[in-house]
Each structure stands twice: as structure tokens, then as C-alpha cells.
Image (cartoon, rainbow, N blue to C red; front, side, top):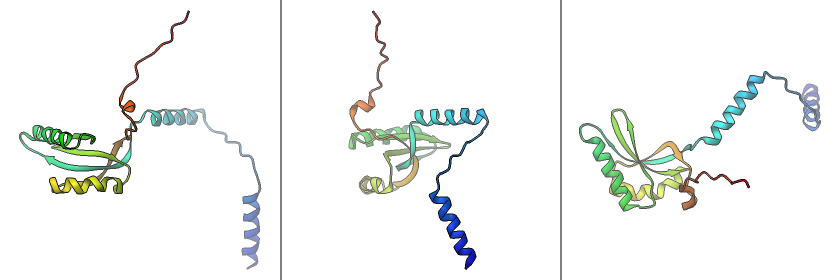
Length: 145
């Protein structure tokens, strides 16, 4: 019991006291950290969920996949649909959802039309907040006098 009380007092003292820590590290560590930050700033994907609508293999599978993507685009104009080649299959996936719950509403509709639909984990594109997000800004250089 004495050990527990002494350990508790030391732990409380360590938590409440302020200390300064100086980290001495190799300069290469800072370079790697900066590269990691730069990579994450330009990354265009995040972990999330998509709805797998169809998988095609064999002759004519590429055309079938693109036809299905076109059909999805016509039925659901605001939905982003993608065709992926995962050897030997062409897979049609749609949506960019951050959670399964967000994907579930559309999944219910798609399940009626395409019985093989399933919600899967995937790397998703960041959601479009406005039409301006889809436009790539032009390079602009201010002219000096």
C-alpha cells in the first residue's frame, strides 16, 4: 500500500510539473518530416468508402464497365463513378463517402437496380464542396510596372 501511495504522489508530481525537453536529432530526420508533410499536402485521396456496382472479366469487359459507368452517370448526374482495372477484372465503383452510414442511402437504391452492389473500403477523392472545387485555377502572374 505504501508503494502505491508513493507511486501515486510521484505520478501526480510528474504530471503537474512543467519541464522543457530539448530534442537532439539527426538533420535527416527533419528532412524526412518535411517530405512527409509535403506529400500529405499534395495527396488527393483519403481512406473512406465507395459502392462497388459491378465487376467484369473476359472479352468485352472493358466496354461493359464503361457502359455501366455511363448508365450510372445518366441515372445519377451528381454521382461520381469510376472504372478501375484490377487484373484481370474491370471494376465499377461510385461515390466518395467518409463513412459507411453516408454511403448507405445510395447503396439501398443501387442494390435494387444492381443486386451485386456492395459497400467497400477504398481510398476516396475529397468531397466536392462547390462547383469551383472542380475548376483548376489558371496560372496568374502579376505584372510589375
